[in-house]
Length: 514
Image (cartoon, rainbow, N blue to C red):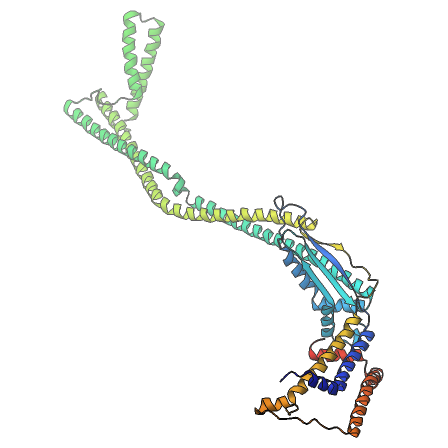
C-alpha cells in the first residue's frame, strides 16, 4: 500500500461521518457516565507493628512471628467471607445491598478495600487499610471496624499461641514427671529385689570372698591340727597311761590352779602359814581344786565309776578338742555357705549391672527431658505473662480513619476523556478495517503494483452536478444526524430505557473490564 496523503485525506473525508458517529457516541456515553456516576468517598487508617517492649535477651515471648507474616495472618482472618458480609450488612455499605447476593457483596467489599504494607531493612513495618464507599460516614465506620477487628485478631492470635504453648508444656512436664516417678520406682524395686547382687557392692563382695577363702583355709588347717592332736593324745595315753601336760590342753581353772599352787609354794618359803597373803592364796587354791574336781565329776556319766586323774584328764582334753573340732567344722560349713552365696551374687552382679544400667539410662534420659520441659514451661509462663501484659510484639494504630470532607471519586474528566479516547479508537479501527477489506483498484499506482504495467493516463471520475449535490447533501444530513440525532437518542435511552452509566457498566462487565 503506497502512501498517498491526498488519496487518504479524501477517504478520511468520505468516511468522516461514520467515524464522527463513533467518536460522538463514545464521547457522549463517557460524558453522561461521568456526570451520572455517584460520588464516592474513601478514607484509610495506618497501623504499625511495634517491636517487643522487653528485649529478647532478657525475656523472650513464646510467640515468635515475622512482622510481615503476622500482618498476612491478620489480613487473611480479616477478609473472611463472614466478616465482610457482617460489616456490609451492619453499616449498610451498598444502597441496593438487599438485592445483592452474598457473593456479590463479598466481591464488592473486597474490591472497595485497599490494604497496603510497607517494610524494609532497618525500617518499620506499616500497614495502610482503606475503603471506598458511597458515604463519608460509612467509609469511616468500615475502616474503624476493620482496625478494631485487626487489633482483636492480633491479640487473640498471640494470646491463643501463648496459652497453647503453656498448656502443651504443662501437660508435657506432668507426663514426664509421672514417667520419671515410674522409672525411679522401677530402679528402687530392682535394687530391693537384687540387694545382694548389685554392681556397686561388687568390690565389697570380692574382698569378702578373698577374706572368707583365707578364713576357710585357716580353719581347715586348724581342723587338721586339732584332729592330729586328738590322735596324738590318744596314742600317748595308750602308750604311757598318762597325758602329757604340755600336750593335753587344760581348762582355764586348771591353768589358774597350777599357777596358784606355784605362787603358794613361793610365798611359803618367805612367809608363815598365818600370813594373810598365804591364807588368801590357800583359799584360792582350795576353791580352784573344788572347781576342777567338780568339772571332772561333771564329765563323768551318771553311775560310772570314778576314774583316775589321768583318765579324767584324757576325757577332758578329748572333750575340749572335740568341741573345738565341732566349732571349726561348723565354722567351715558356714564359711563355705557364705562363699557359695557370694559366688552366686558375683555371677549375677554382671547381669544385674546391665539391667540396672539400662534402667538408669532411661531414668537419666527421662530426667533430662523433664528438666528441659520444666525450663520450657517456665519460659512459656514468662511468655504468656508478656503477652497478657502486652509487652511483646504488637500492632498499634498510629492514624485513625477520619471522615473525608470531599469525595474522592469519580474522576469525571478522566471518565469523559476515556469515552472520547474509546470513540477515537473505534473510528480509527473502522477506517483501517475498511481499508484492509477493500481490495478494488482505485489508483494508477495500484494498477502498476498489481499487474506490473504502467498506465499511459488516468481518467478521473466525472461527477455530474446533480450527483455532487446529492453527495454533499447526504454528507450534511449525516453530520446533522450525528451531531443532533445521536445525543437525542442517548438522552432517550437514558430517560426511558436504562441509565447510561448502568449500560456502560454492564458493557464493561461483559468485556471483563468492569
